[in-house]
Length: 118
View (cartoon, rainbow, N blue to C red):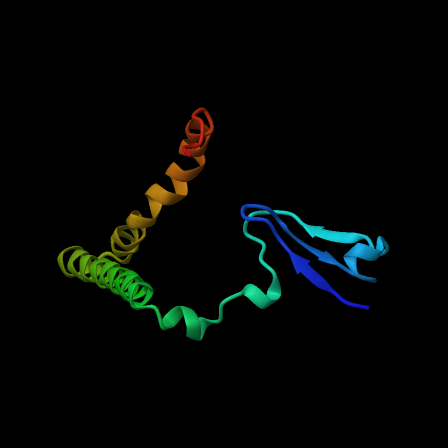
């Protein structure tokens, strides 16, 4: 008994379980979706981190996130220093989260009106 993996480019990978595929027994198990890959073809974190471009993009994302957090804290400290109001300080810290929370659900309906590119 063998377990054979096969996939065409852009198709789901198929695992034939049971006898060999040319013997006609053993139903293929299909795992749908473009994002599915055979377990043997998956990359590890070490392999991905070895790619310089990925490290640069990941580092930029981490620095951007850290900068955003430092900016929010600085604005909250500035607001508290001028108003001495914990409520206004919390409001100033929370306001940058409002556009993704409120805009996402509202704009997703608009995005559904257009065809996907590609």
